[in-house]
Length: 309
Length: 244
Ligand SMILES: Nc1ncnc2c1ncn2[C@@H]1O[C@H](COP(=O)(O)OP(=O)(O)OP(=O)(O)O)[C@@H](O)[C@H]1O
Ligand SMILES: [Mg+2]
Image (cartoon, rainbow over all chains, first blue to last red; front, top):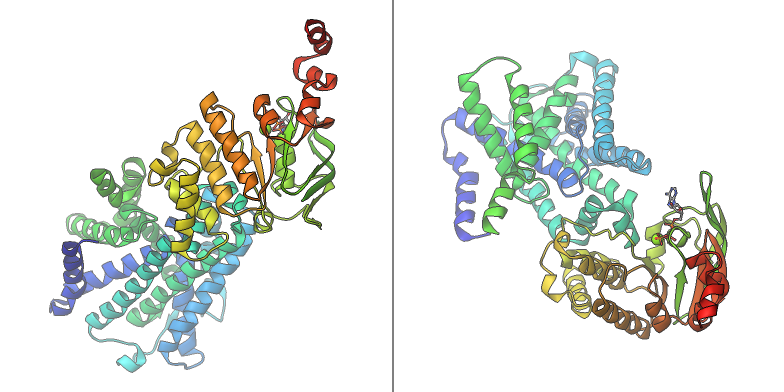
């Protein structure tokens, strides 16, 4: 990447630390979280063509992991990060193994993930272990040692660290053999198999990796809002936002989700100041998705690539 | 190297392959020929693990590999190409070849160097950084071979890599296949172009309507009446004989 881009990136990333307006910091925090989640989706959906419509499964798994760890077992919430990495990957591996062994891909895989998210929502809504529809309140206890921040800039810092981690994973995929195999499976499964790529294993690992990272986002959510419930955790809207962010920016590219999150959040914020009807955001997402699929199949990065070529 | 016996496959009412047996000695070039729809590609697909045979054995280096997955068979050193080329369309030519090279090396720079070398050797040098989708038919056929070769196979299954090429291109690819064999790779190839088969093959198997009808060196096969009839229709052998 060229020097001016690096400078712009650093200013955008570090700028919020200098801001005093909590609403601006909040906007930055939400954008970075969204970029992070989009990047997590991108690892499976973009690089591997595993177009999940239910990625909030992993987000919700992480959120519940954090909430249950503290309220049931009294563990320190920082431990929720490694724990969520594990639970998120396990859920990803389980869904992946089942779906890919059965040969599901494309829209069938999308539907199955959507269905799994709904199963998780119904289960968390009815199980005692997750306190059903009541959700789980995390007791207030501000302090860095307790992973609860009064200052949004600290939350922003954690989100930024997550984004750097997920983007590093994406950059690694772009370079490494594993990423090459994933991309090959996305392009042509038979050809990849003929050249020695193990389809089930490669895709399952990708979904586990993506799931583990996504779950970190759920932990951060739980520690920020101190409340999780079935709809927040497993509602379809977050799944849609994750894939939208990646697709707007450019799925399967390293910087796409970051670009996509910035653009989507600016659009959403501006339009919210004009039209403040409930249900408008999902509708807007739908329109944006159609525009992307119809006009920019390779996202904003695609425009840049075409202009350079 | 490769020994196939009793291989059969039925698609619904169609017996696509019937009790096929063939033997490919190490270091040889063996050809599998036959009219359209004879079951050649289906035979390849069963050998390479893409289609599960109804019955039969596929023995590679003494191990029965029937029922194994394609990636396991590739790992074991036998790689097929596709008659209908299957490029990774969104990736560059180099990335396509590199995926093959990644089978033997996890290191990206080593795999890239190996892929570049194979690409250059197969005349794909000028196209390495272009998208695979932009290649011509001849280019795609070469890419199929290049990717397979980049896996450093001990045995190559080439399915009609000359179809759709002009005579110059065919000459080039014939020389290429000979060089591959001289490099120590055993080759089993499906081909319609008889000059190429005659120039390359040590041994030829002829398949018609799913069953083997002849087997022998190319010279003998070209004059076998059953083969001529399978290709040209009943009575053709007699007519040709009258002209000779
Ligand atoms: N997956 C399939 N399902 C049903 N029928 C099939 C399938 N694959 C091949 N066939 C049929 O099996 C027969 C053998 O096909 P195959 O592709 O093996 O022939 P081939 O010898 O490779 O012919 P060609 O020279 O045209 O490539 C054909 O009649 C074909 O239509
Ligand atoms: Mg064929």
